[in-house]
Image (cartoon, rainbow, N blue to C red; front, side):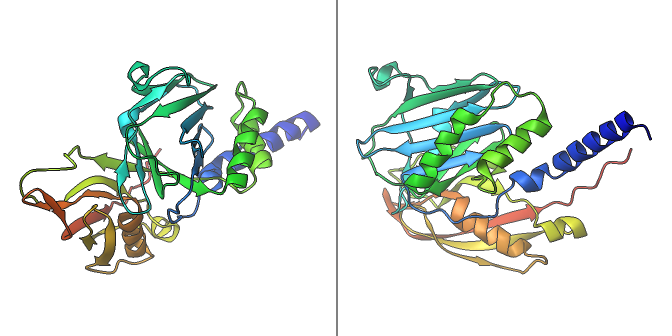
Length: 295
């Protein structure tokens, strides 16, 4: 093989290896939501950062590395406080001088662009929150809580990113160099139901946000799926205080299902004559085995 041909073959092989390992490179292990003022997400296409400041300000920053415009509706940002209350912002403020009523209801970022917004709110400012989820399209971006030094280091890395980089190989390589193995957050498909957080009457609990957990690596390799029902106990805020599976699936699928329901699903509480009450609820998670497409 000629030297140039060998060089091209080596370059293509390395690129193919990196791209084939992209899901594992950018996937994070499951993490338990922890109360913090700083939350972040990163993959090869988008960076998300949420900051709650001591001055009772809230900022969200989006770095869009992809080739398509991305929009985050204000109604699709949700936070859970340490005591279980769900908080939602009112609007995106384009600078600190504008009032909430002049803000927009979407944060849209063109391809290969970085933008930052202050957020308008009408709830009692929490200082720290336990869980942060952003919904875009059919994907739930679950932000990971960070310490202040970790968050500051994370955001400083934004300035080093070449937004015009078109090579997927170089993009992934540069992210790996800058952030090492500290790839924050996770994403998953979801289903969302709009329901009133209060009622004057009586009703049972409602599943507001449900996720479709990914198979464990071993289950994926073995092409194993199945379904599992989980009984959950909810408090007056709809927080899960206990989750018990009805059956055990192989290869860690049951454990992953319980983890998802306990940490990332959202529930509206049951009501009795207009008052929220503790309740019990049964949910189901289905793992479908996807067959490989034939050429």
